[in-house]
Image 1 (cartoon, rainbow, N blue to C red):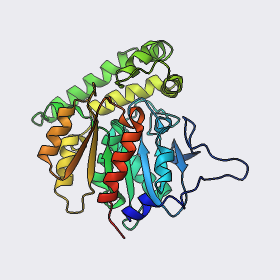
Image 2 (cartoon, rainbow, N blue to C red):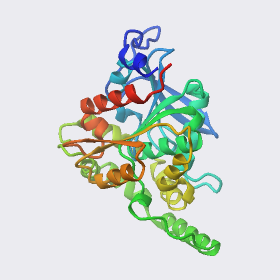
Image 3 (tube, helix red, strand yellow):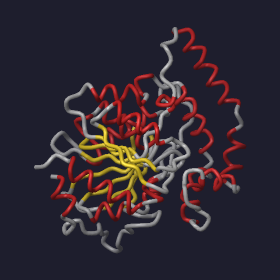
Length: 335
């Protein structure tokens, strides 16, 4: 299936509505839709013809489906039906606060993605989807693949972040300690005045300074990029969602950490192929992490893009597409 879907772009024509063409690039690319999962509104986009291989794009922290502005059209032209999902707490999806029975972390986002694959993409063991994620999106894709490998044809993480990849997981603490730590983290983030901090950052030059850290080249003239990142952060519910994420990620189970997700996949004969794409100039997640993962798991591929930071799909789109499509041509299971 790989060669047929990647080389044949003839049937992957632009999706049309009755009265207008759907944009293929820019932050408003694709056909916008909403889907409700566990009572929460989830925003998603679609570009590409029916009957072609499904491919799902997953944004990084602080971003949204709009961040794939330079990628959706190229992937559609390569013969894919391109979806993109705003994870809970991001983009135009719901931004819930702290919930007793629903923590915002990559385990929850992995479950959201699995449900999206089944209910919207209609993926199955016979029609699996390709998952491509930037940063947090890559961790989410890995999480879904670890628990629902039957729905996943391949995973591309560009790059793969996780604090547990920097520092090994600590020895399992006793229950009383975990309860104490959980309460401490919850109290700390409840008291942290995020309702003041988030708007200050979102409405000032601080957001541009933080965003520049993710790029190797200057983003001074990229007003669209600043807008698509700032817009979700300016929503009145953004601060409470950030608080829920901070607590959720701090208290997530060890089984949701990248090292244990990879260990889980390593034990499966049906694991999907994995490609890591790293910007050589990534200031958030050093390249040495990707190199160490490739050495530890020889079945993982690693590709490095020069003069590129933490967002290779956006900063070096052409090289990113070439890398992705060449690898998929080799690694997707043929008909």
